[in-house]
Image 1 (tube, one colour):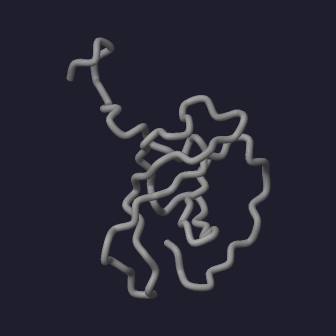
Image 2 (cartoon, rainbow, N blue to C red):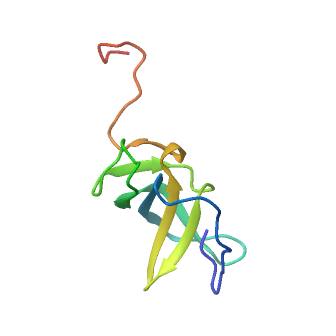
Length: 101
């Protein structure tokens, strides 16, 4: 969640496996502290050099409680590790190898 005047400390590690997403914000909804609620869906803006499953422009689904929220030049961004993203939007999980359920 994004809060007014929120500051995050840096994380250890590299950005090679990170994905930057512009998340959808639930319109008109805020939490008790006044922060905006994120939907858990969004558009990939950029990816690190070791990211293989996603590319800029992909629409993805993720757990909004994971990763880091950043407000940059008026845009809300979510920074996640590649393994924190559940799937590309539209990719349906299947039980059978041929794609049928």
